[in-house]
Image 1: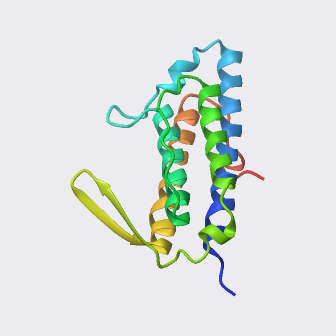
Image 2 (image 1 turned 45 degrees about the vertical axis):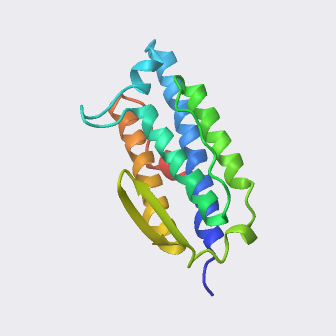
Length: 167
């Protein structure tokens, strides 16, 4: 028996976004306990040429809302990238989870062979649905969540693998 596109994507994505939201709670508590201005972490980057913490969250949510929408043949919602607090970032995650949950399995299953083309500047990237989900959407989600997690760890927030994987 094979796994469906919906099962391989939506529940996995929702789980990791919810885990990310819980990690943001720990970051907020860390800042409050140590009297750290939350903007320090929200704007922190591990390297000068790396995107900041807030952008990692924004990209992760953009990737998955676009992924689910394209696989379902729906319009991709546009979000403004104005989040400046942990609460703002949690609201963005919650909005993304709600968007993902708005799709039924019937809307996404069967999209394995769907042609999907993305443009990054002048370059077009062509995928079939399965490769798009497994080779683009999920790896990008995990990369950006991992970078957010690494930034929090670097800033002293007590998160571990259990927080990343959830329960």
